[in-house]
Amino acid sequence: MSLRPPSRRLLALGLSVAVILILMACTPSHNQSTFDPLGPVAEKQLTLFNIIFWAAVFVFIVVGGALIYTVIRFRRRAGQTEIPVQTHGNTPLEIGWTIAPAIVLLVVAVPTVIYIFDIAGEPPPDALEVNVIGHQWWWEFEYPEQNVVTANELHIPVDVPIKLNLTSDDVIHSFWVPKLAGKQDVIPTNINTMQFTASGSDIDTLPAILFGQCAEFCGVAHAHMRFRVVVQTQEDFDGWVANYHELASRPPPTGDTEEAKGFTAFASRGCLLCHKTDGPASVEIRQSLKDAFERGELRFPAPNLTNFGGRTTMAAGMMDLNRENLIEWLRDPDDVKPGNRMAELANVYIDPDAVLSDEEISALAAYLLSLK
Ligand code: CUA
Image (cartoon, rainbow, N blue to C red; front, side):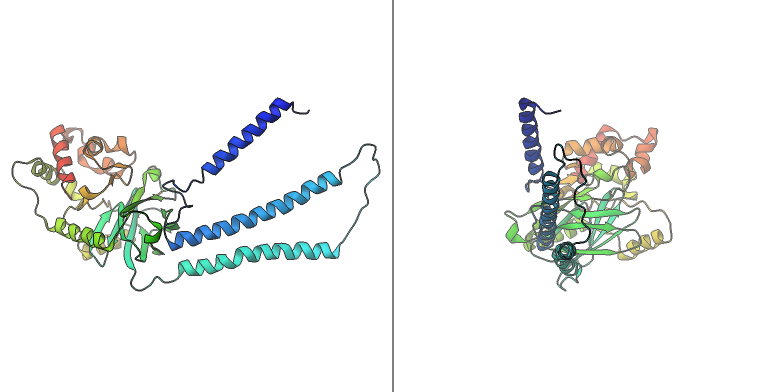
């Protein structure tokens, strides 16, 4: 059956639209596009992608071309009944199709191995070290040198090499900031490392907020286990650290204010059992929690909220941080982010007699937003 001309035109149109749509999917302006690398690690990975992609295109064209040529050139003609001439063995051809794939393999393998060693090598000694702990379903960032523990927004200075030590205290997650580096598994009882630098020469304006995402299925809220990377000047980063310590030592609000009522609710309604707002727990306590997990004891970690009000997002990068969203979250966290631990564990959400009142929710929001 042959296609009539209009359907051929329709087919051509359909194909063109499909090609345009596919090409549009590669737009580098997307928040999670790997075609817009902002640092040397992501740049090398993109270079490698291009080498392998074009090697594959070359193989596709040569093999597909040879196939199409052969099918047309040696097709059975009308009236042809005899079997075509049978050949067996052709030394030049056999040498050729052994050497050609070996060359293609070399073109792919040599840069791959070079880049693997390059990216997996030791970061420079002046690298900023951050311990990343994956949790169902949020990220904890611990800066041992700066004594900062925060959640879901990783602040890094521009042009400074970053070294991450990644681990998890529940299931396997995967840490991924597409514009900075490829994925790295985050595995309980094991520390994986990765390194990258955000290059100032690639970034137009600072601070730049980059998107991160857990890239390994880790349970019901996996798709909502997002985070942000805030790339800023060294000065702003130092300011962020100083602000964290200022907040950690700030006394709780007092008097007849919304914030003070919010803090009272925070302390009396059980929030303080899991969330800290006065800086990191001591190194000993943090270590004892890690040891407890390694012994197989359950723990229920929660994001450190010391600098919560200064974040741009909430609920692990799910939504913008603002009063409206925060109230929605405090009223019914499970409705916003199904599966989250707070809705499962906090007394105010599991005991119908302990439900937070509208006044309490409003005051809690005021208190939390003041933490900046
Ligand atoms: Cu954590 Cu997916």
